[in-house]
Length: 331
Ligand SMILES: O=P(O)(O)OC[C@H]1O[C@](O)(COP(=O)(O)O)[C@@H](O)[C@@H]1O
Ligand SMILES: [Mg+2]
Ligand SMILES: [Mg+2]
Image 1 (tube, rainbow, N blue to C red):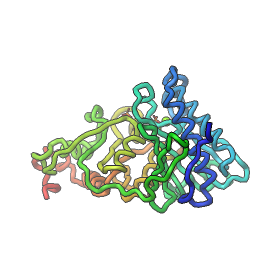
Image 2 (cartoon, rainbow, N blue to C red; image 1 turned 30 degrees about the horizontal axis):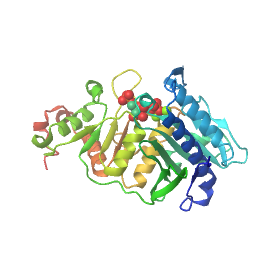
Image 3 (tube, rainbow, N blue to C red; image 1 turned 180 degrees about the vertical axis):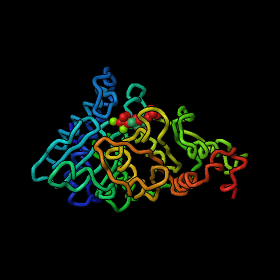
Image 4 (tube, rainbow, N blue to C red; image 1 turned 135 degrees about the vertical axis):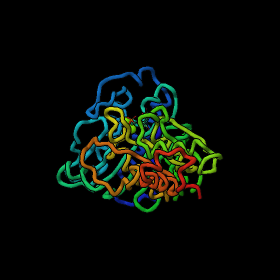
């Protein structure tokens, strides 16, 4: 059996060991997912963020932690661990990871993923992760779909690698991905409609009104319940994703975590020419104040994300009005 690898020609030298380790962990996890052994989706525990942990969540965390043992990391923070763990005392990087994203899809054989964010390591774990999101120096995700792809940015564009099943190596398949500008597709969990804030309801109402509404355009909808899979679709063909805050208890700041979900996705999307906000302000302009803290997340084609922000600026009367009376977007 070959050791999983990656073409690192376009990876800056300071990140090569890290990327090879992530590629190794990702390819090994891809194999485990492909085999689909019974019990991977068994509920095991509750993590510190209050989410249920499946067996595969815990295995994925252990696999990446092991693969990253000698990758130049000083600190490792994970969705599945209450606190960061120390890695190499002389490591210069701090990595935060969602080892298995979209875990409700394990059983259904729908795409799941891994998300990672890299910061310069400070002497303390706290200051390495609790800082302005824009201090990110690299971020990306792996999507375990019909093809396994690794998408990463080091701050100069977004690269896509595809796992070659014959060689077990991630080959560079797009050195500079660009998020297409216009695709009339939105992704939101519409079952929460009644709980959403008014500007989000108004935005979606206007999409649903289609050709007869103020947007004069029919839209399509997707919801995979796997952030990585939605991010990859949007990177490939545009559109918009929304996970807003809502009125349910525990969803006051939405569902998704800033450190290892929203900030890294925002980084990759911005580097591909898209936009990512909390509905109004760029995710990367915010500060990370809690290891497992949440934020509302809206990302995708720049023009669409800006439009959502404009709905937040509408006067209350306009947001509450039936779409037919909302004049602002009629142009
Ligand atoms: O079930 P909901 O509320 O639609 O939430 C789906 C969202 O939750 C997540 O599954 C959360 O990630 P985890 O699976 O890592 O906990 C996202 O991938 C997805 O976008
Ligand atoms: Mg997740
Ligand atoms: Mg997860």
